[in-house]
Length: 163
Image (spheres, rainbow, N blue to C red):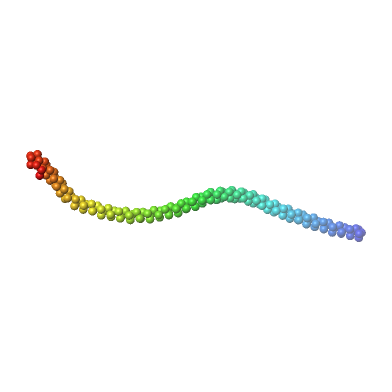
């Protein structure tokens, strides 16, 4: 064979080897890309799944936030009621203190009145004791005067005249 032909064959063999290596590298790169594609596809599926979970969680958090906002509104109303109740309680305590002071004053007055009543009752009883004999004497005197009046009337009737 000729040298040109042999060189040509050698060049073709080199080109073939280069092409085969290029093809092997391309197949290897293709397999690596397919593998990377599957990894990325798995990652994308996991990300989609995670996104779905996040969306579900977000919806749950929004519902919970709405519930909490409703609770805040309700508690705000209750806070106003509690504030009003505290104010009323303060007023009631002030009134209670005033009434307790008044009760103590009235109790002192009542004790003084009871003592005075006891003194007056004792005085009345003493006067009754003193008046009792006087009353008896007055009754006896009255009877005596009545008897004397009757005696006078009889004497006048019998003509003894005025006595």
